[in-house]
Length: 89
Image 1 (tube, rainbow, N blue to C red):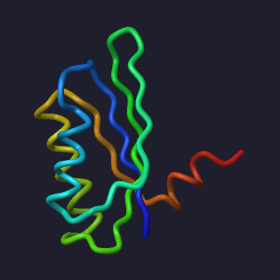
Image 2: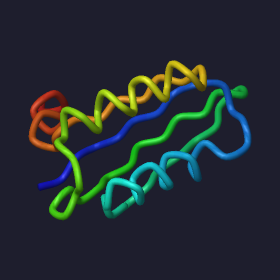
Image 3: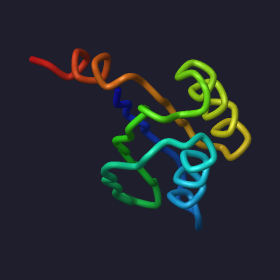
Image 4: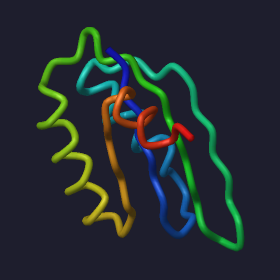
């Protein structure tokens, strides 16, 4: 099972490291990362493998949402099937 993590917010040091660290804590493997900084705004899309995760997707998603609020970022975690369905033409 795979998921997509998206992050949007003002650029600052350590965003990618913070997200990767939270994934490691939950035993989530990072498969691919794409990030861009435009006019001081950081955007990232991360593909992750949930096969061996230590928690539920819902719990991890809620945790990342809360972390985003604390760090003034928008962090979303969604199952890859939902992400794919949202982006089909």
